[in-house]
Amino acid sequence: MRAHLLNDTTAEHYRRSVTEGVERVANKLATTRRPFTGITPDELAPTIAAVDLDRPLGDTTAALDELEEVYLRDAVYFHHPRYLGHLNCPVVIPAVLGEAVLSAVNSSLDTWDQSAGATLIERRLIDWTAARIGLGPAADGVFTSGGTQSNFQALLLARAEAKTDDLSKLRIFSSECSHFSVQKSATLLGLGHEAVVSIPVDRDKRLQTAALAAELEKCVRDGLVPMAVVATAGTTDFGSIDPLPEIADLCALYGTWMHVDAAYGCGLLASPTRRHRLDGIERADSVTVDYHKSFFQPVSSSAVLVRDRATLRHATYHADYLNPRRAAVEDRIPNQVDKSLQTTRRFDALKLWMTLRVMGADGLGELFDEVCELAGQGWQLLAADPRYDVVVEPQLSTLVFRYIPAHVTAPAEIDRANLYARKALFASGEAVVAGTKVDGRQYLKFTLLNPETTVRDIAAVLDLIAGHAEQYLGETLVHAS
Image 1 (cartoon, rainbow, N blue to C red):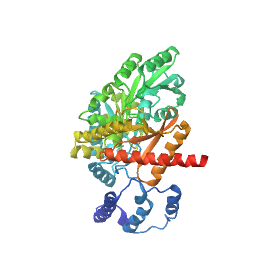
Image 2 (image 1 turned 60 degrees about the vertical axis):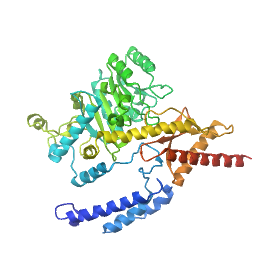
Image 3 (image 1 turned 135 degrees about the horizontal axis):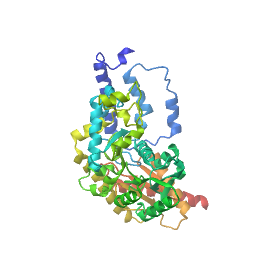
Image 4 (image 1 turned 45 degrees about the horizontal axis):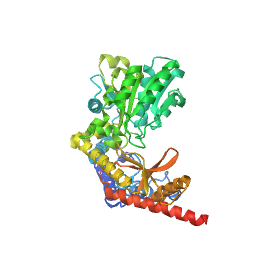
């Protein structure tokens, strides 16, 4: 069994095994003709359940053959131009190379004596991101597992910085289109989801600052404490960007922590043409970025940034066996665990490092610009198509729309037709789209993160959706009669 340990004596075995795996994946990427096979859980579950995990195959080739049956064949492939579903991006090759390197070396980013140069690379990338945001010389941050953890840590710091120890008085303000992790974080922080005050949005799905001002004034008048305002730079459903400068003014007026959830919109930090859409983000106290969304990185790759590094002390704990306080002070040892909610942590920063060193920031920004431009073209297509109602013109790369039949139909029946169309499309494997609700009605959603997707792809998927919806309505009419 020692032959399977990665070390100096097994380097050739490692090379052969990984190469064989890469060849399988490369072949799959080259030959996949649709984003999904359409397999159902009930169809796939027996195949996986039949695998006897206590009887190893003992051979890499056999294991890869089996992997084809249990995973590779039926995986959802985000690189396909007709994957238009969730906030999943195709990944760039330098980042995948970084993933291979970091997995093999297996550094743990909690302490210097487990990571050395990896610690400094992560810190350098945090400084680079903070500079792109404009947070100033005292900024700092740490990589996280994703936007939910980043938002949670930001609100943890905000809670600690609030001007009361009475948690029942704390309030968080965010738009009705903000990410569910805001409510989840409030619950985990002991505030309860009712501590989150939902602010209405305008017709472009951006937080209404007049409503925010009124709620902040009411909060103070009622003897409560406005702990934080969460502004969203790229909502999950609409890609809308809240009015950051106006929100920053209100936070300054009330002494309230301003957090910007830019998990989606962070790609604009590298955009050669659209960076101005994030104006005001530089005034935030904390910012969430998800490189694994609009920086085309493999999952996971996220970070939380803060304006004042001193606030990260609220997440610091010292253990004698790991990061003793004395060593940190006297020897100036840079332990990343002092900033993180995690202890053992992957060197995910290497993926972004390799990407920037090969492609550069402008290269990434140009890719994100392409999908934002594509979304604008898709919006024009939808706005001119009488079969569809499109909600808002996109600020990023998301389109939310709804199939509307030519003949008068009850809204609930239209809801069911749109739901059916999405499910039927997924079952066919021809394309993947997402769904959401707008004002209680069922809508569909394109999340465009693949520069290989074309307007022709969008038009073809719209035709497929309309076909499935019309089939449903036709069958319903037949059954009704």
